[in-house]
Structure formats: C-alpha cells, structure tokens
View 1 (cartoon, rainbow, N blue to C red):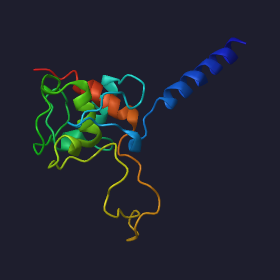
View 2 (view 1 turned 120 degrees about the horizontal axis):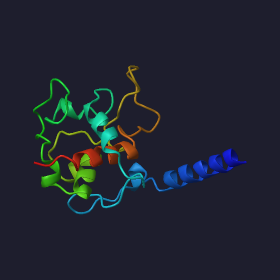
View 3 (view 1 turned 90 degrees about the horizontal axis):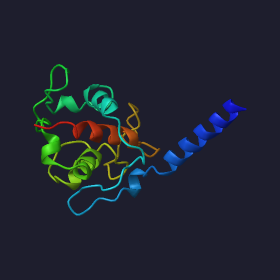
View 4 (view 1 turned 90 degrees about the vertical axis):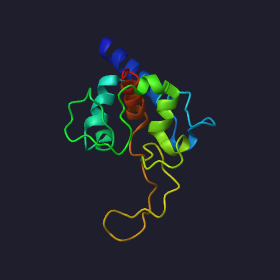
Length: 156
C-alpha cells in the first residue's frame, strides 16, 4: 500500500513539474533579452549545471568560455570569461543569455541553446537533404536552469 501511494505521489510530482515547463516557442524574453520565469518550473541544480558546462558532449560552454572554477582542460577564449558572471548579470539575464544570447547581444556568435526555429535549412544528419522534423533545442529546459544555477555561484 505504501509503495503504491509513493509511486502515485511521484507520478503526480513529475506531472506537475512537466506541466510547468515552458516550450522553446513559448519563451517570453523582456526587451533586454532576460527571461524572468524558470523554464522548467524546477529550481536548477548547480552541480548538474557545472557538468553541463564542462562536458563537451552536452553544453560544452568551456569550448568558448573560461571558468577558472572548472577543472576542464583547453578552455576557450572566444567568449568572455565567466568568472564573476553572477556579479555582472542577475538570474533572469543569465537565463536569457543561455537560452538565446542573440536576444541580449544581437551580434554574438554564441549558439542559442533553447531555440528550435529560425534556422536556415538545417540538414538531416549527413544525407545532404533538408531536415523533415523540427529541431530539438540543444539543451533541455532543466539543463538551462542547471547552468543558470551554476553561473549564479560564480562571483568575484
């Protein structure tokens, strides 16, 4: 009986969290590119965000940015150093920059990690043909929140 109730409670909590997730096409940016509300409806996990930023197969933020708190090798210098990011931007600004930096910095070369449209004819793997399915975002809503949670820990 207790296991059944625990399972039902878990499903209810998971459904509630999923219901609060903002789809990429429904994201609301303010005039400066900030996103006030959480994209996932769940607080970010700074430890998971640290992993997303440093793992080359996930976010790969360190390919362009330097973060001295990360032990990743071969950190980039194309983008600004993220040391002290929490002193320069608040949580909503960081969320907007990670989701789609072009909304804040129109000339940036940083990829939009939570965007699914507006691309110029993306290809379908290595077929040489245009894709037929909508593109998924590079990071999930929760991964965006995790990265933002980690960035808010980076103070000078």
